[in-house]
Amino acid sequence: MVQFIQTNFVLILTLLFALGALFGAIVNNKRKDIFININTAITAAEALEKSNPEKFQYVLDNTYGALPWFFKLFISKLQVSMAIQYVFAKVKAYAKQQIDVNLISTQDKEFEALKNNPVLTGVDQATLMKAIDGTPPTYISQE
View (cartoon, rainbow, N blue to C red):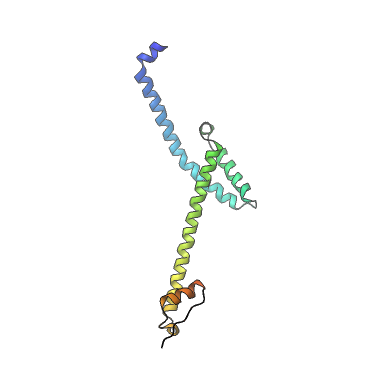
C-alpha cells in the first residue's frame, strides 16, 4: 500500500485536487441557488400570520431542507441561519435606502414648491427646510 502511494503520489494528488475543484465549483454554483431560496422563503414567511421567530424558523427549515444531502455534511443549520441573517440584513438595508431616496425626493419637491411660492419670497432656505421637516419656522424680519 505504501509502495503504491509512493509510486502514484502525483496521480493521487492530482485526483484529490480535481475532486476538490469539482466540489468547489458545485458549491459555488449551488450557493446562488441557496441565496435565491432564502429570499423566496423570506418573502413567503412575510405572508404568514406568525411571530418573527416562527417566521425565521420557517425560513431556516425550508432553506436547510432544500439543501442536497451531501451539502448537509459540510453546512450546519447555524451556517444557514447566518446566511439568512445576512440576506435579511441586505434586504432591510436596501428597503431603508429606497425609503430614504423617496423621502429625500419628496423633501426636494416640497422645497421647490415652497421656494417658488410668491408668498414666501425672501424667506431663507433654512426656514423653508424647517417647514418641510415639520418644525415650526422662525420668520426673519424683512425690514
